Length: 474
Image 1 (cartoon, one colour):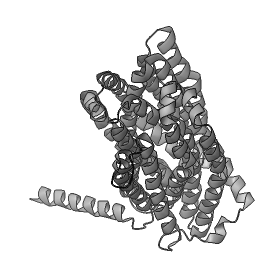
Image 2: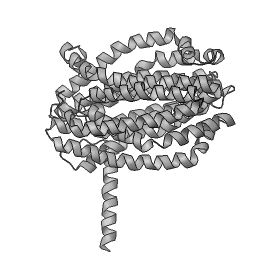
Image 3: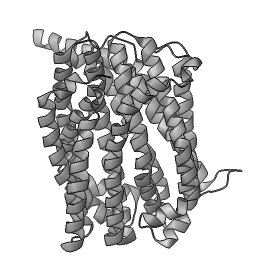
Image 4: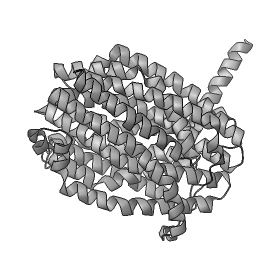
């Protein structure tokens, strides 16, 4: 009887925390239990990142059923590979925003936290104007550079122009969510992605296939729908920044450039951006290597596998982001031991999550791939990729947690140095050797990915235990 009461009590407590995490009620994350703090942050963060991955999957599903679907799938995949460089800018800036905002919140200084967030937005807008212009002008050349055939480039130029021309929306969506995560309000970040995705899911079939007076734009329609959906998400974020109902005390005057603070933010953001550009450029190279050794079908299969993989890796990244916020806020509050404990508790949760995902992909990978395309060769390559990649999922998750911990502390150089070695000096040469010299083609690329990630996880763990991150000033 007493066991039953205890079980009911635990369930009741869990659902209480679940509801609280989805509502986004503000709590002092530096004083409640670590497990409760992780759950309050992780649930909305995982749902937020799951929603981010849905963007690519929704586009992939609808364009995968168009005529000449291999060209459409390849265009979406290659464009996403290029956009990962823009994502790197967005994620790097959001990491800096999370680190600084979390540290100021931990110090109980919401005014300074709000100003830091606004100055990061100023930096993002200034940089992204140049990127958008380049994307509009060189869209076709970008696809050809990525290894797309002339026919695929002709199909996808307008798609790339819209996606890269509207890239400021992508950057703001990531960045503002990073500000809210640093403040400990992950629920607002989650809801902004819900809004963006619901709009995308509704608009994608309308703009791709046409409805009433709206013509069928085909592949281009996916870009239109995605950009509008993300734009609505950013609108919701901006409303919440200035409605006065959260811990951040934002004002329009905080957008006036403060060059001293901008310099301090750039000092954290620059290596963080470089950190993700290193990884992104590696993925771009691997995508090009698969396209040249596996042809259109090999490329389409690889891109399908990546989109499916990211659907589960992004929620894991959301879970790891809980460690970033807790490390930042606890360092700000002077609770160094608690910051370290938060990382290892998060690590336990992510290992369990990724182990389950590995089993799912090892057993059902071909079924997931067949949902997005009916091309038997594409399904076969995607299934093979998923089986090889999923072997390293637990390793990916572990590496994410330690990298997030470094970034949350403001020590963005450590994971950057790890990425330089693991991706550029090891993964790329290994993939090239296996694919070209051993004539393994795309399979060689698939093998190189989890191999490099294992090295990242080991190096990150060793450096984390050394503890230099605990002394980082932001």
